[in-house]
Length: 521
Image (cartoon, rainbow, N blue to C red; front, side, top):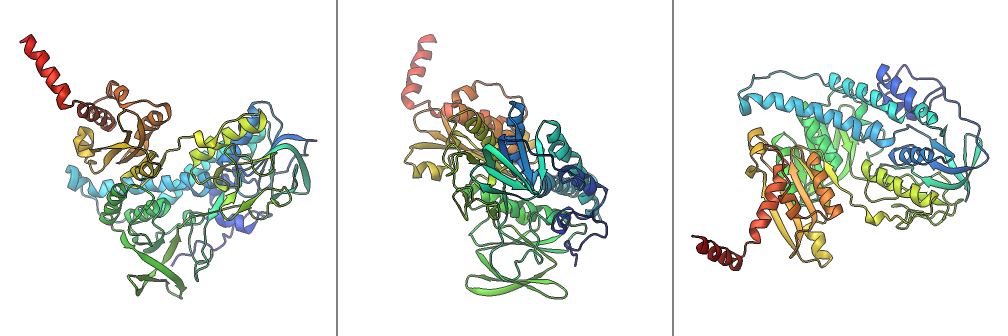
């Protein structure tokens, strides 16, 4: 059984061992990563008398806030206690999508013979090579989020524990930083419920799963949300025997039920054993394995695995940053903000995972831009005006923007629902990826798109046009008159618009056309 938490014999002196645990194995790639995002020899600058903006947290929301403000000429300080780049770079989007790409390539190689008459592929792959490639790519990308790059942008970068000491000052490393405005962007961490065996040292989370160098023969995944589903399918495709536990009746419970069902079927085909409607009671640690005790339909059961991955939610990082001293209200859901992202201290704003229900990198980016406007330029931009899309990167992908049918009904809106199966799209058929659909929520009596759900292999890439349509009010008439290249999967949008147009051809209108053409005959 692998132990992802054992310390590396080569760890830099003076760096927090808890931090080093996140960048194992400490090879050349992770050394390069650390040099960029938490330089061991970094010396904090002398603070300026007063900053226009101090940003607490160096993840996506913090980096965008700091860079945006500095680019406009403000005096800016940025504080990060762990790894610059935050979740997205270090243990989120970047490493997970590198693994997903590898797993997809392995799967396509194995299925090429059956689907396309390709060569037959036998034998095991090299999981270690997959993870090394991930670490190499992550290290390269980390230059964009590096402490030195942000210093070169004119930002005073402080590495260390920062905490508010008053309503207009933060201390870090013995220095006091006074500010006119501040932005809290401390992010979130994996939620660890008080269940026996769920302690960090016994289970993997998204923060530690990417430290693996050997493929777990048996993996238990607890949680059927986006992270759980993506990684369960990925590890199954890479060769692990995977069992996923989810309390709800199906995975991705917050998504369209028909869409979630397609993803669930694909996961099962890839070898994931789904235990839905199952409640995990505890994880028992033995000498040889980890035993997941669970209950399903009132019946107790157990399953032995080599590793357990916990993926059941996120907890905002609100502890130990002095929010009480700054008179900033918060609770277990995060920092309280108004629609302009102001906290209860009007000098302080909060953005990203620490203050938003939309825990996506692109949402953090968008919220940071609003905070800069409102904090530095007396702006009145509102978070509620944002149209935030999202995508779960399973195979097929599940993407969504705007209202769902259920949310539209709850708000009392009268809508039409239009569904186009992918097997009506030539490119999807030719690629052998015709399992899925596009579902549009349309304002009744109009051509305005209020929401969309798309299940397709490249759903995330197709979501941009739909997001623009929802945001800018681009109607189906405009989409129908827009030329889409043939054959592409984006044709599903054109087919939806054409189908909607044909639906407007009522019997009365048809009679009028028939009469018109009779006159011409």
